[in-house]
Image 1: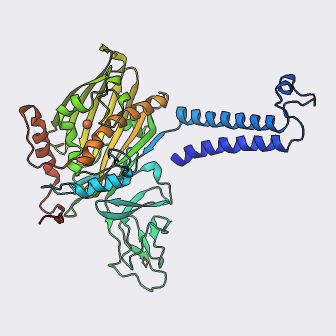
Image 2: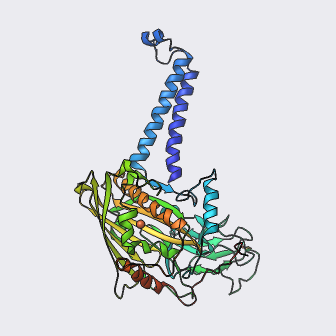
Image 3: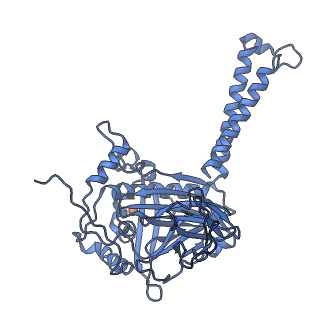
Length: 457
Ligand code: FES
Ligand SMILES: [Fe+2]
């Protein structure tokens, strides 16, 4: 989508330059078809080449402004942050990348739970994978090739070819419902990973196959199932019917990479107390926690009422957070901006944030956390909203949510996991959350084996 947005700007600039070129090539004064010239332009001396240059610039700027306005009003919002973009303090003349690296290197690992819980994880949004496309994705410390067969079905297989290790997603080709390796042309079927053709061999051995990951496509997302013991999926990710029926449509997405253990991210839902501190300053005061409490913006406040509960059987892999949001400006409550949100977590990596708002309409943000490495999480928010509500509204909702989320990112990026936290009675939901989350770990769940390499003498 970003490339689409760019192309609108590029088209505007090209048209502007085109008009400019026509004007420059044109012999006479472009504003004077009768050859007389406008008296005003003659008076100010804006005739000939300078006049044409001014007209070009105005045309170019106007078209760029129109392109920008078009993007703002009609295109989905795409906010893709690089791993060092948010939440690191780059002082002493250091670059942000250097600051991020320092924080990661110095991070105290502590006693961590296993790093890859069992569950469903997003690998891509559906619209990012056309028929015949193949993409390389890093997930759970592995490289996978995600491809869409010509029949429209998406598949996920190990990226490295079992023959001689070429990456199937780098130069590999989708043929029918198979993926053909770019190195020697072995062809693997998406459905079961079986090799169906070796171009130079008489017979394909029975054992020739690439590992296939159980996957599904729902609510505009492609997800894979991970279980440390290779067990089959133990639950499904529910379908949101408004999306399937086209009543709620895609309006944008954000992507962040977070330097934290996966469990720290959903734990936020049960950490009720942080809302009244971290998320109370108005979104106008930004995301940098050094300045969010500045006096300038303290007249805008968000108020939150939150309740978190795990669900009972047969949905014990789910939990629900009910959120009531109110906005006050100079102490006055603005009921039109009140919002009720139901955040339903399904397994360790997927949350449905459903907005139901009398004035701003209804919609859903799919919040997904996918471990890339043991302590690096890719978090995406993909918004679907009522198709009859102007795109500007869901884009604002997503932007506002993103600002609040990036405050959490700054905390997560710099904190450590505390296995035995110092809690008060009012924090009790945090322990409840830890007990609930532990169902996603098994005896064989992978752990991070930390090598202690400090300069201790
Ligand atoms: S490495 Fe894939 S076919 Fe040889
Ligand atoms: Fe938060």
